[in-house]
Structure formats: structure tokens, C-alpha cells
Image 1: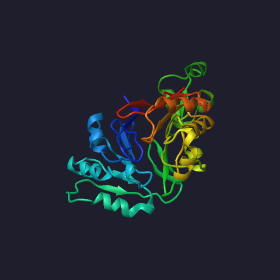
Image 2 (image 1 turned 90 degrees about the vertical axis):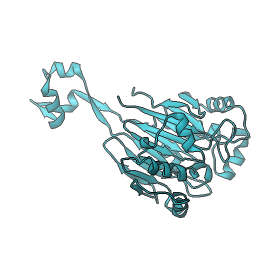
Image 3 (image 1 turned 180 degrees about the horizontal axis):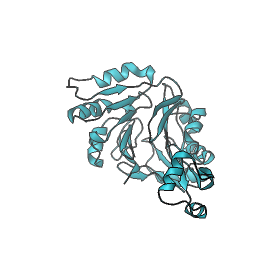
Image 4 (image 1 turned 120 degrees about the vertical axis):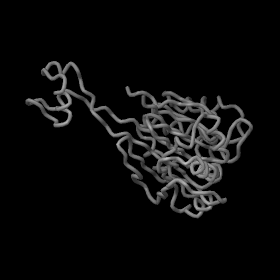
Length: 301
């Protein structure tokens, strides 16, 4: 049975706290695992969450501030220590190549796994697989930052009542799906489009076109809300979002499930983030992330 869920490994911005580790987010998508922004301590958080190095297929880094990337060294070395049997691909801003190199080779270890580097230099598609297309969009932060978006291809759902009305059953259903027409009956007459699921990951950024493009139509949006609305000036100055700004983006983009994360240590009450998000007009499913929680990708309507 396929599993599509977000495993939250850390939710703190800038520095960890007693209750929040540096960033870290694993997206389980059927048989693959995409690890986003592994901050310091991610390897230990993976252990606590029951995530193994063997679960990782892609490493996706938005930018090279420490709270989003210092865990790369440990994660990469663990992938090699455990001799992960499949290739692993790393995506990160091309402008930060020197930082990636330093983290990848920060200490001595034996390389046993093929780690493919695919740095991101511009908006566009990064990878296409049968299960998804992975895209990137430029964000607005003091250092170059990219957000990520995963889109499942659309498919078709067969409609039993229409199939029966045309006398199509058994192996003929498969033939119709493969060929597109059978005995004068077209595929679109007995089926409908099943929209592919969409996941978006938006970290450190001000409001910008990239935020909107990544969030559009997302079934699950993971987005930073470093500040509360009363500190919007600080947010803008430092290249971040407030809870209300993130929620307005999600509401305008038709997001089904909004996950707020990357919280400043200055705030002690997570409930305020939820309240401000609701006050901003978001009415869908809403989660204020906490370390080690799991969030399922919403089921198709």
C-alpha cells in the first residue's frame, strides 16, 4: 500500500530550542523519500522518527543558512555508512556549490554510495519520474533560495456506470485504456480526469511570485511562518513570512492542508500562529507543526 506523508523532523528557525530541533522534513511519496532542508541534528531526529538512511532518494536544500543545511554532513555520511543500495540525488542552489562541497567533505569517510549532484540555477523542472515531477521556483531571501514543488501526473478514473452502459467489461476495459477507443466508444466518454496530487515546500522567503507559483493548488503546503503578524516589518527585513501572510497565500492558492513551521524562538505559544492564520482567512485543514509529527497528504476528493 502506498504511503504519502510528511514526517516533521524539526521546526525551529535559526537556533534549536528545548522543544524544537533545527529544520528537517521527510516527504514519503509511495516508495521514495525526499528529505528537505536537513538542519543540525537531523540524523538523530531521523532515528527518533523511525526514518532510515535507506528511505532517502533525494536531498532538497532550499538555501545555505545553517538551520537548513548543517545536517547535510551527517546525513550524507550516514547514507554511505549504511551503504544505501540505490542512487541518491542532491538538489540545492547552484550559487552555494562551495557550501555543499564543504558539507559533503567536511570530514574523512569512505564513499560507498553514488550521490548525484543536481544544483538548481533557475526556475523549472528538476526531475521527472513515473510518480511525480519535481520543480523549483526562486524565492526572496538575503541569500539565494529555491522552493520545491512535487506534482503527480494526472490520470483517468474509469466510470463503472458508463462502462456498463456501453457494454464494456473485463479485458476490454484495459484495451480501451491502452488504445483510447473501442468499438466506437472513446475513453473520455467512460472516464474522467483524476487530478494528480501536489505538494509544495516553501521556506525562508518574503512574499514573491515564487511563493504563489509553488503554492497554487497544493494538496499539502509546508510553509515557513517565522514571525507573528505584529512583527511583519522584521519579517520583511529578514526575508521571512508571518503566519497571516502564509495563510493568505494558502487561501488564495486553494491549498487543502496548510502546515506552518520554522518558528522564531521569541514565541512560546504555538496556538497564536493558528489563530492568526484563521484570522487571515484560511479555512482549510491547518497544522502548526511540531517535531516528530506525521501529516498525511490529503486523500483525493
